[in-house]
Length: 118
Length: 111
Image 1 (cartoon, helix red, strand yellow):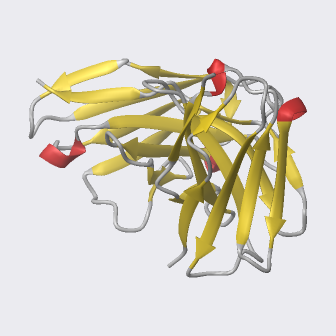
Image 2 (spheres, one colour; image 1 turned 180 degrees about the vertical axis):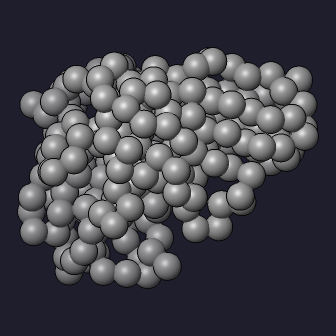
């Protein structure tokens, strides 16, 4: 059973770059589409984007100019970078696996809280 | 961009009662790409329903999904104590699209 675990700094300064990593265990990253989703405190879910092991990516148009994702197949990890962050980027960030056969996110990480503050 | 509007925002019910949650799309959505998730406080969302009406693995049959076009419904036939949570619908544009959105959520709380 695939499991996901997010890691990265819990505090980022305004205008800096948020960097998170998701480690995939129990399965190979050389399959599926790997996603980032965030949730501001007390609010709903927002899809950030996905990366496939082939390097193919798609991003939420509202965040596209600030988002970069990458995959490290040797470590079974994928990563998110979000540049020029503001307080509005404060959220719980989740990584999630997209299961193409059912067109849904079937496995999620536990989430990691990132606060943007000086 | 297709917007998903969930109603009501909050549903106050007692255990054993039936819950009916609505997800309305601003334009027609393929049922193939309509999904429901459950989220409890401090936890990640959990997949409940995919393809508008198919239950995910391990989901009890008291949960059912229905609908087509612009109107979709999640029904919980008899609420159990563990069902009090927030529920989100989600749609994907398909074909490698960059369009994937969530509804605002419906909170099912104990009356």
